[in-house]
Length: 236
Image (cartoon, rainbow, N blue to C red):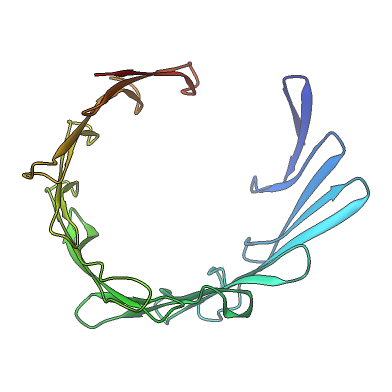
């Protein structure tokens, strides 16, 4: 085991030979971790003020024992369940009593159809760009509860989004620097209500130092640990 002192508070850690955490303790709180034979986390136990609470993690798919299939909370209630197909792809997600049921079907043309708990379906179309599948269009059928939500996307050779067109035909355009960080975004491009937001980045860190839109200029400062320490906005 080992100890770390943070601002006068001592944290004690223990771990196994594989460096997986076994316990953390501090100020009367003890957290223990348990794993199965495949080294998957199966239980988190929290002991505080003489009260023990346990959360359990389930891996019940015999085709792939590494897939998380459910979580049982500290009350003993299974509040989350996931299922998968033979390829290990998620096909459903739901909470207790089927709440929030979301189902995914993988179509032969490479698209996927997502059905939400209200029965509304949305089809996602993909294209392989830069070795990664990117969403290039979304077909969201209308229902009694929500309108159609169709949109399309284009990308550059790096897989960075260049344009996004929403269901109303409004286009948002994007530009990037050599690091792939967004430096300009224009919403409703080409229309009288177009709005551009520019971003300046710290040259050594992936942190924005200034954003400019049509109404204000906002500047950011950070400490050595990259935590934001100030934010100042002035009207243009």
